[in-house]
Length: 218
Image 1 (cartoon, rainbow, N blue to C red):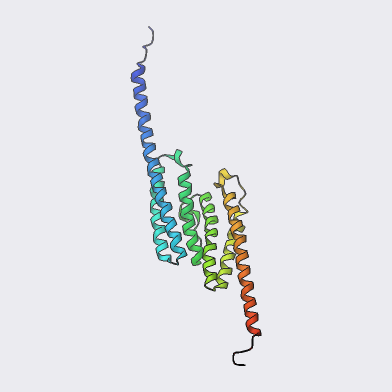
Image 2: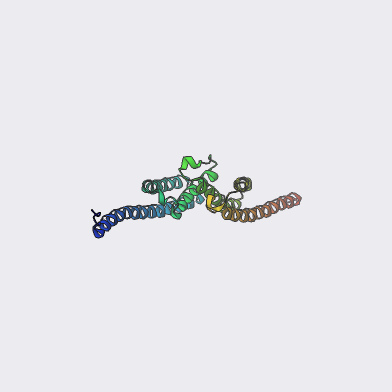
């Protein structure tokens, strides 16, 4: 007796239905991740702006908000590990790490680890590079306020971050393009070093001139 010929229409309808269900779930998760990542990045940008305005409490609140959105992205990802390599998630984690690390560097707090932030190592490292670059703006603000010693301390922090990053020698596929980010930091660091050196020399020259001037009324 010959085997029964399968009903291809019914067979494909069953398989297609199961595949659509799986893809519907994947698509919904992706949309959730995209939206949550977008909101994470927005909150992080606002947090970093608050740091530069020395509104550290507000910066922390905004970073907490970003953490909630990032948690939502991670929750949506958990049943769909195939989406783990998506660019938006890496970008959101990087921005979150940048926001937390920028605040820590400016406020002289301990740096939160990748584990504490629940971000990937590559995201943390890229976030550190971006945070060190952000210190340039803060340093220039301190220079304008005449805070030379604080400016020197900020430059040292930038230098320390760069010193770590140049030792991370792995392919871009592993580090999320860290080499380019580190190269960009190097340019920012050297420009900042030049600005600070010029200001320090001017300050020393001004102090020397003032010591040589006769007292008023003398």
